[in-house]
Length: 139
Image 1: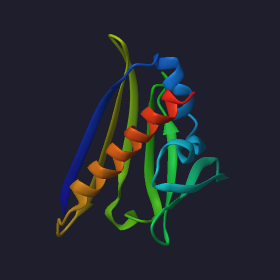
Image 2 (image 1 turned 180 degrees about the horizontal axis):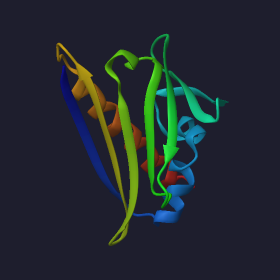
Image 3 (image 1 turned 180 degrees about the vertical axis):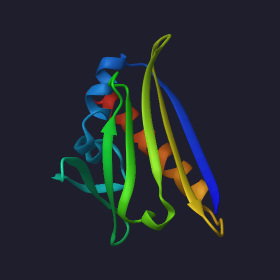
């Protein structure tokens, strides 16, 4: 197995607290990520999950999610659906920086035969951060 990773960072001209309001709420991704059409949140055996329907097909991600103790890192692990066979995980973190916030979206997966998974992760993260920036600008 080979571990593949991708990471995208973006400085946004918005205070960390504002960005966190929308990144910290797992269901809010439907409002700012252009590839997410529908989201539902549910709980099983005391764990929190997010089901996301991906645009352009009959794909969905079912992710277990949690946040760190400081409330500025948000972790997702696919348990069913798209990329579940690859043990896909991602993390979004938000930090204060000069002029606003630094948002970092990182992901990794495991595969025997790498194809274009890194490019797919980067495109997903990039489109998500583009959408978040547009969403925040329209507030």
